[in-house]
Amino acid sequence: MSKIVKIVALGCLWLLTGQTPTLAQGWPSWAEEAFGRSNQGTPRRWSGPRDFGFDLDEQRPRQRFGGDIRDGGPRPDIAPKTPPTVAFAHDFPANSIVINTGARKLYYVLGNGQAYEYAVSVGREGFNWTGTETISRKQAWPDWHPPTEMRDRDPSLPEKMTGGLKNPLGAMALYLGTTLYRIHGTNDVKSIGRAESSGCFRMLNADVLHLASLADVGTSVSVVQSLPASQQISRAPERASQPVVLPASK
Image (cartoon, rainbow, N blue to C red; front, side, top):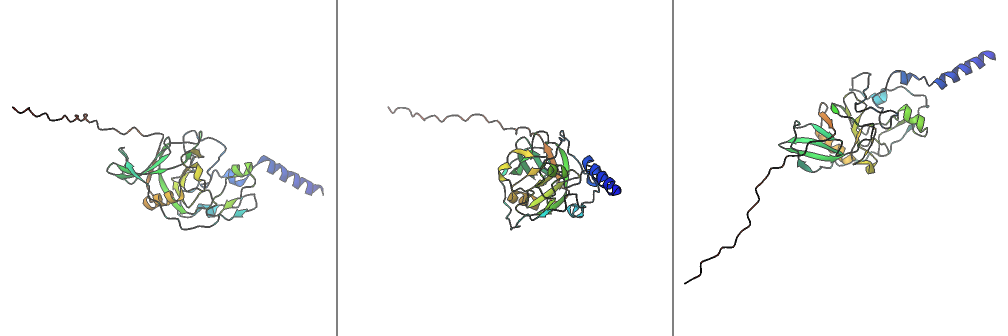
């Protein structure tokens, strides 16, 4: 009996220390949204394998929460929505993406001084960052794996939620390099135009599907705090027309 008691005591001590194999391996690529610490302007990166040819979500080992998998709901056909075309007089290459976090706008540069403009949600204070990445993977209806820290704060969250309308990652995700961040859809429409994420960029599902139809793997993504004001061409004021006065007849 004393041997069993010792084994149970050691097991309890191991749980209290919080040592888990997942944490020892570093942050996996699916970790995003509501991390417990700030990135201080620099994107956090996944230090594991960089081969994004397979679905890393499906390769992840089981966690200690018993494999709670929930259905993300239906996956309806959503028609991509073409955003407005705006003037874009900035020095970024055509067919690249520029995210202006201060204005909560994402631009797909068309060239010839024009770009598509989308409204986005950006990282809240302490989770915003700037830099240049490339799209490393595209995934329709991605699964959501709430990270361990999030589930520690809210035990009601599942270990995994399959892709669908209930899933907070929306209808499409564009992975940014080896960082922990994505450009993705959302089921939280009210967050668009606000700084509410933990470093990812949320878009309406119809918008992110349109963007994904244009941006392929390897597309450059520049994240900036602001863009310089567009230069306005000055024009001389037009003269007011004057009435023509005819000479009086004699």
